[in-house]
Amino acid sequence: MKTDTDTSFKFTVLLVDDDEKFRKQLAEYLRGEGFQIVEANSSSQACALIRERKVSLVVLDWDLHKVNSSPEDPSTGLKILQTCHEVDALLPVVVISGEPLLDVRGDSMMAGADCFLQKPFALALLSEHLRRWMGRVKAEKNPFTQLTAGVIKTVDAVNRAYTRAVVERVGSALQAAPKLGLSRQTVASYLASPSST
Image 1 (cartoon, rainbow, N blue to C red):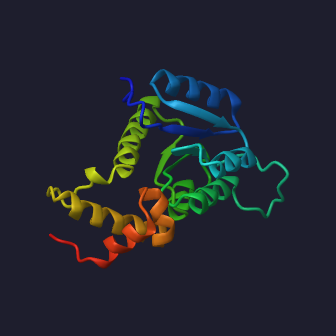
Image 2 (cartoon, one colour):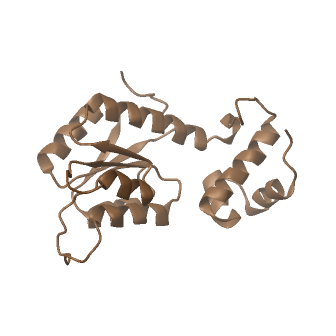
Image 3 (cartoon, rainbow, N blue to C red):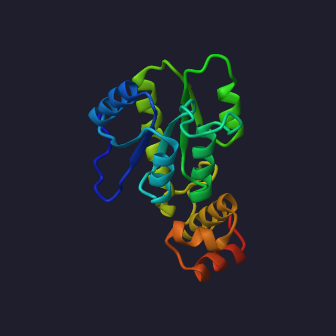
């Protein structure tokens, strides 16, 4: 099953894994499924791509080798996840790991990952996760599709509710305005007015 071919919406997946054979095979599979993939094999390369804001979602191997790192340094996966949150609080991160001795699932989810998959996993499972996230990211970019509690509201009420949700997630109206494609004045007016139910 191929992904949606809406050319006005670009969804780029950053695949971060230092196991070159695994990364290449996974990237080839996901490209075959219709996803646009960029690859990184190190923490520095991944962080650079994230800071350039060229990706829509990150698939992150938590167990990257700590090249040029001291043993006291935190997981490079953690460093990349922190960079994602610094650059874009709404950037989805799917953590993958084959580490049997550590609680990577707990550590990564507590650090703010959106999803965790234990290696080995079915490729179709990751593909399905990416399709779902792609739908959410696409809807997030279009405030007119926001629904509250399954009840269709007026466009104005949806815009106000969506604006409030984004401001709450990113922490300020100033940061939310460019993400919403709205002026700061419009965001402020949406926040000032009461929400209709």
